[in-house]
Image (cartoon, rainbow, N blue to C red; front, side, top):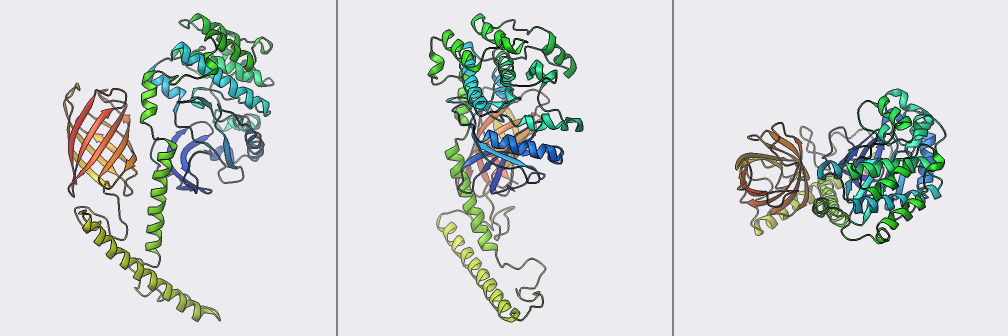
Length: 495
């Protein structure tokens, strides 16, 4: 997850956006919350696509078809607005890793894991095809690795762009490595195309690379059309299933049901009952550290309550530089203007009074709790806009007994809400983003995602625990997300 940028909206339809999950040829994907506080995945379509009327019509049809897909291995389509500007789509949130992310970070998957993956995705394709939908864009970034099995996302939506030929604007929908020959040849595309890309997907999971290589699009497409798949290093039982999926002729490919049967035959039926855990240890550990939907929902509810309280308190507060009399700048009213103006002034004054009372109560409560008032201390925000205790820039250092570099400087900067932030380790040259996954009045749990590491000395992801120490200090515990023995401790001051 990445923090929202200044270009991202805060709300789309009735959904409140929380963070970025990723982006692709069709658009950006966000972690969002329903009005009731439950996490969902919201995809906002690129404006270049949305400006095409044919795309909107096809998008509407594909969304309607996708809503009919109900499977254990698919992410359910929950809502959409094809007429919005830009259009958007909401699906169930899957707390997992993209297959691409899992392989990139932890390497190729074991054979048994790939067989479970193939069987699960094949079952998802059965359900998708039964609803009259062809996925057309099955690739590692459209398959999630969840604790209870794989999940297929974005089924059928790529057809909206493909059939309207909007790719002439410079946007390529789909990856050549994960296209079927008939897609490249611009021939009719049916369910068998998804079986072909399932074979490419499984080869990538088992080998850590595409069976048709990487590089420029045209040579890759030529190899998909005419060349043999490179499956060197793939275990023989799995290799045979993948080879049948990658048959050039549509009629030579197995159906999804046959793929499931072949996977079950190799594993002695174990693919029909997914073992826990079914994933390698590294990925299981990464999934365990990620926040669950229930914890995200609780955090969203707390944030929503805080926002509602702030909105309530700020009603009727005079803006800086304006008259303190709420009615001073009121425009001329019609026949009922006098009474309406008096009511408006009474409401505004009552809101200001309520706001002042709440401030006094807040000061009393924080005093009793032994916590400094939001309006006190270095760099504290104005009392009318209370900020998280995390807000601001924290600077200090850390000691790492088992690391290659045993002492390094740290700089953590958090937003006013305390939900997101950035980090810099100046002495190491590393930097990245921070997402707060849990927060109390004195502690915080933070997920660290590395984005810059020119010296190649920093872990790709870290888990940070912060403990408040007085009004301007905090203790930091850092742990490598992929190596639990790699830890560090430090102390930071608010600057």
